[in-house]
Image (cartoon, rainbow, N blue to C red; front, top):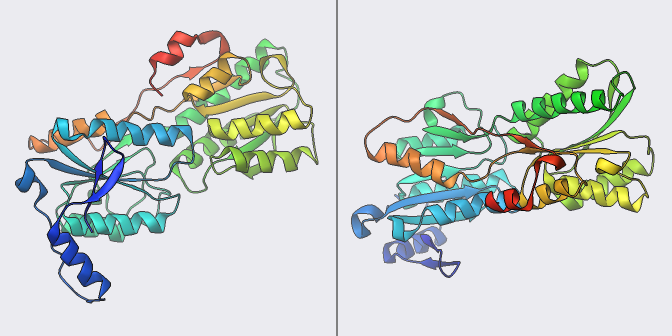
Amino acid sequence: MICRWNCSKNKIRAVSGMAVLSMVGLLCGCAGQTAMQTETEAADGLISVAFSEVGAESDWRVANSESMRTTFTTEKGYEFYFEDAKGKQENQITTLRNYILQGVDYIVLDPVIETGWDEVLAEAKEAGIPVIVVDRMIDVEDDSLYTAWVGSDFNKEGEMAVEWLEEYLNEQGRSEEAITILHVIGTQGSSAQLGRTAGLEEGVAERENWEIIAQVEGEFTQAKAYEEVSEILGQNQEIDVIYCENDDSAFGAIQALEEAGLTYGTDGDVIIISFDATEAGLTACMEGSINLDVECNPMHGPRVEAIIGQLEAGETPEKNHYVEEAYFTPDMLTEELIASRGY
């Protein structure tokens, strides 16, 4: 069934009689049936943009979805389709195939993990539908299967965090001390996890007095990070740094530290490093709970729109679009700065 996102009422509504007929056929199990595609642009003058989102597991993810919704509105000439994959690649593959059957003009994919996309993207290419990948990268044998990618350099983010930590320890006169690090990993196989993990592991390998004492899976959620960090603290509380791969994981780690009676942040014993720099994360950083928050900008809607504008004009966009990002420490932040960022 073809469904459209009604941005004003936040509901999904069926819009095509042909789609209903198609759905009936699918329910009847008509194998090999040719999909009836909708001529959305010809019918209503709107460009159809279909977005498959990873989920809503974090503040960053919610901001990313909202950026798409507020960019691709009917007032601006778009029909927007949205599907939450709930963190499962199989859901995204099903969604992409539905978008292909619907004959949308553009598919936007924020992939759960990097691999496993060759077949469904080949189907999109055969249907003549450009695929724009955002945030996390994909690993395919033929990169012509997607039109462009826009997002962050996650490995660079990790390197920035490591360089900051070294400078911070030097300022504290701790450059020669043995430093123990608890690493809270994000969703395994995602670009953010792979890049931020690589940045840390490479940095530790270059410094003889740094040691990762444990790596636990936080899955980019507060609840999972809290559970995993609590378990580690029950066994070992001699931790100098907790390296969390997003803000929600940092909040879970902080909750576990508080329950264990351990101090953290600018006035505590445990250094907290986080990523994403959401409003909640930066507020915690400004208050001294997080020592460092590395930016990962989720406002990809306008960037995707610019790529679509190029394609509509018959131009060829650049393949990769890296977002310029920075990092934040408590002394750099004000309420006005945080409010001005929009996420």
